[in-house]
Image (cartoon, rainbow, N blue to C red; front, side, top):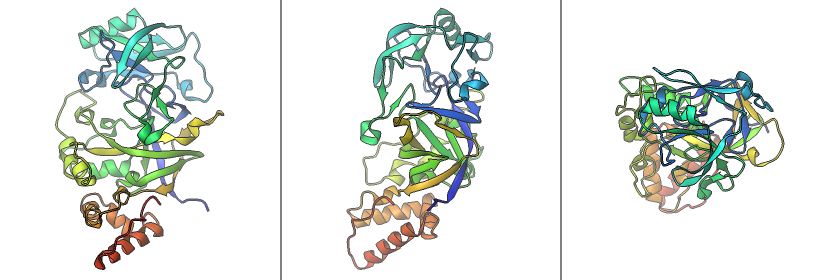
Length: 360
């Protein structure tokens, strides 16, 4: 049976240089580390440590361009292919996509350290002048380096300079629901997703354990915990307090994960890995307009079923805070979920315990 379409891909974003502006594209080839070109470059300090918007908000104003054909399957750069970099008050910088680069050691981003290709003195001078401190531009060394994602969540998958996982998916419905709570609506670029979908209920992506986009299957790894970056206006690099302050009220671990150790985090969006990226073959690509089909749903509140009272409390949190409870009961996520939820509540009246609820 063909799974119904729950949403469509409306935008695809790639961020060639980590923490710099993204590129909106109509299609994107998928590699073993995510979208091709995504977070392939990184700006580092004199000690090789990564610069991000968390400490250098000005990176939000750095625009990046790649050749249009760079997003076609099988395309390879030529001597005339460049990564073009622009920023306010700066001359245009062109970085060759094909020239050999020198290797530099001691590059580090979060827990990972290794070697990378150094893009040379011209790029170093450009970023040093822009940031006002010693900087270099490096490119991930796919030939000799591997950066694995957390094996507790997705064993066997790798990234380049992404924070955690190869893909971040967000729904327009979630953004719209959040904007209704904010005094000043914000753009999707605050959250820097790779895939934006529309047509589904707000926060539906929280439940997506396994989805198919066109012919490719993606696994929902974990909700994306948000750092400082969403509070940075991507148009002027000014740092504020929103949307984090509002998200704390209904998207914090205290609300969504009350039985776990509290870390003061807020969540928005779903991290993904592409299950097909581990297999051989070419032609893996997704496009704007592709349909999204849910193969497996997951409500995290039923994954830790053991103590019924806490489970019920978490259901109520969903009812009041994120609309998911109503959607489950209304059958928005399938009759299987509706039935098991109602049976669960009926059993509460008889004080019975049920530990067989899990992933559907």
